[in-house]
Length: 163
Image (cartoon, rainbow, N blue to C red):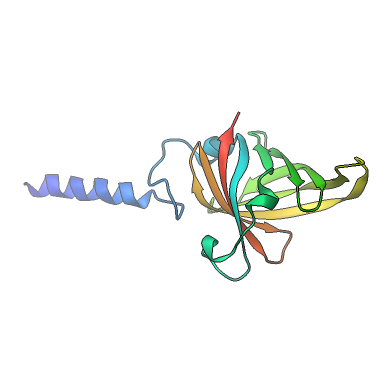
């Protein structure tokens, strides 16, 4: 193999592996982060983890979060709805989103309203800021560490796109 072909091969391999942005992949994508993110998502699994970066080290919280759906829109707005079975309450949240400069986190800022499911009475309303640390982002999978407000705990979500 000539030196030129070897050099081109090494450059191509370096570029391929340098494209991996998220811990869980994908290794390479032709779509931008925004194009992959802008869609409707629903939680498939959820794990609570106070001091660990290992999602399975925490408690399985899927039963609490399984009804969480979030729609991320291209116009930088979002809407989130979650029916919490454990508390018999529903949360509806709307606002805006933005990536951090390195594209590794999503910041959401908006208003959250909590309702009693049985009576539909408004329980509370207020501002809501959250951080979503992305570990995988494809057009079908969005895996994130979700931090509600500013303090732990973090909850690890594996979400799937839906229509």
